[in-house]
Image (cartoon, rainbow, N blue to C red):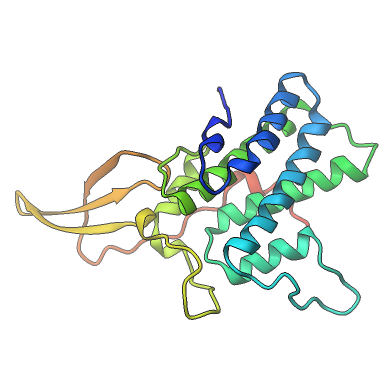
Amino acid sequence: MEINFNFVKNSPTFSEQYSAAEKIHKLYTIDDYRDVISNSRLLLETLTKKIFKLENLNAYYHVPDGEYRNLRNDTHYLRGELDYPLSIMDLFDEVRRMGNAAIHDSKIEPDKKQAWRCVCDVHDILVFLINSYDGQDLYYIRPDIAMEAQTSSQFHIRVKNTKPHIKLKDHQTKKVEEHHLHTNLKKVKHFSSVKSVDKPAEKHEQIKPAKQNWFTKLFHKK
């Protein structure tokens, strides 16, 4: 599977992160897997700070006694303040954990599979952010993330302010008032796709929660 970060270069909001993303990709091509993961964590830290500014969040939020503001607490704070898909926030946590291990534990030697996983995590985080803030329709590497992002029931509203932080209307399931051969159609715009899919929708249809993503199981500890 080919992957690149050219889509970041033309982003009005995140173009400054292109060089860091491209560096991660180049490190992967030369088999420098430890630096792939450590640089992914650095990029995640930059993106997190960027989100704080975009959303006008309090950078001096309260932390429990004995703790301090770090990437772990920052990402946990984002979980409580924003209505991002849970799968995206899981990617944040996974990159953070992998990066911590690569930076602080010299006994661990990351392999190609782990490095590729980290590259894919960074790719899909950037796709989500650019789709959301720039109104793009970029494709994810993982279809399960796209499926969760398209389903409005997955966005449990956790925004504490009265005004929403992020507009997700373009990425949610929409119902269209059409009648074709006496069949109601539900038009689904995939979160990361430029195509729309029409399929029959039964009355009183209930949306089932997405299954747990396979890529969040490796790093269980917070």
